[in-house]
Amino acid sequence: MTLIHPTAVVAPEAELDSSVTVGPYTVIGPHVKVGAGTTIGAHCVIEGHTTIGRDNQIFQFNSLGAIPQDKKYAGEPCELVIGDRNTIREFCTFNIGSPGDAGVTRVGNDNWIMAYVHLAHDCVVGNHTIFANNSQLAGHVHVGDWVILGGFTVVHQFVKLGAHSMTAMCSLLFADLPPFVMCQGQPAQARSMNFEGLRRRGFSPDRIAAVKAMHKALYRDGLTLEQAQAQITALTQRHPEAAPDVAMMLAFLAQTTPQRGIVR
Image (tube, rainbow, N blue to C red):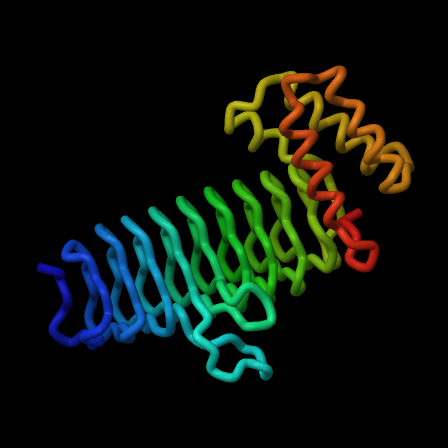
């Protein structure tokens, strides 16, 4: 039997796996689906068209699936989709998507999300990320795999953060943060690359050397973005093992608009 505390209010239409645990005074709406092994703490509200995967740990006092903070929203059946094995600590707010985008706010797998984190409508979060306390994402923000956000990081709407990037505490992002880059400041400025994180994830010396060369082209050689892209393209000849890393960087830079730019 599903372990639902007698004070919890779960809509009869909600679909909860038999192994789901629901804490006291939690409210779960009729369009919610929760996968096997997920634990939901006390005093949570999970509503809207929300789908939650397997083996998530959702701590007390979370609001998941509420309507977007968007004046244009008119009740459309948008969604919040959360993957597997995520930890969501206290007082987080994840909103559903909006019809002005794909209509889905999406969180991947194996993310560690600390207290007071806000994901606005249509945010897309990858896998293996860490969001420290009070990280705040405005609408339409895309966060790649293995990203780490320092506490009190604030991200402007439509900003993209590339895989393996990292922000320091109290960073304010108005521009896209390329893969591997570490930034700090208000507004954020690039400081280095996330070399220690890459070593911990098993990057070889050759791949790390390619990341260093990409950093030099983007931030140290005084090049325009187009010139830096040309230099980065040539890196696959010297570092063939890093070809996927180079391709990821080039793909990210190609989708950055001149209006948004990258963190410099």
